[in-house]
Length: 317
Image (cartoon, rainbow, N blue to C red):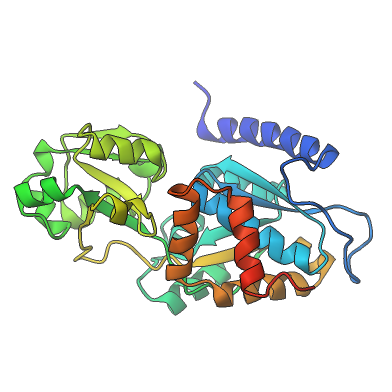
């Protein structure tokens, strides 16, 4: 059986082919524009990649539009995959910019050696230091945060008298937990729930990254506890109960742009300035409202991103 590194290399090869195809045709991608002064003039576009969930795709289009408004040639490569694949693509130069989340990114790149905490400033600073040695730079973190939420239905909360994650310890052995397949390896997911809260669920069901499969399984009764994201509009619309993280397992998860240093060197500091201007406007409330338009109203992430940037005055060159 091939190991993880072999699988990631194969996936990166497939991704490289996808990028090459995207370069041949901009259909479905952000239209390229002429590079501003300071670019090297070779005409290559800045590729913004995303993780495999809708909010990340939306953020990728926000980043791409903000850059395009300043004259940078850009395209979007959505749904690259999990953090393992996106990180590999970024390190290989298959994508140049990625919307990240400070706590999760820090835990990943440091291999768990650097603790991500609830402190926005400390976590963002530690991430910036960790990225420097990898040839990457981070922009300013947005006020917007989106972290893991341990969620149950109102009926389950009432039945077992659940208000906090600690309350699950009494009944976890009878409950089925569902979340993304990578949950079994993430320190803020199953390992953390076991280490910090002592939770051992009856079963874990691998589903998707806070997406429709997880939501359907929870509301349909196929699982009892789910990992969703804190900005998920379905939490409110479906009257779900977010269990309080009373032992502070979840770190700060501010949205932050991560870029290749070579891209900043090539196109100039204006790339970071454009993304930082966007971050300065993006609050958790704004991100949740944008997610609602995409996830509940069924609007295209690209169109939602464009309208919001126009409303914020960020589409003016």
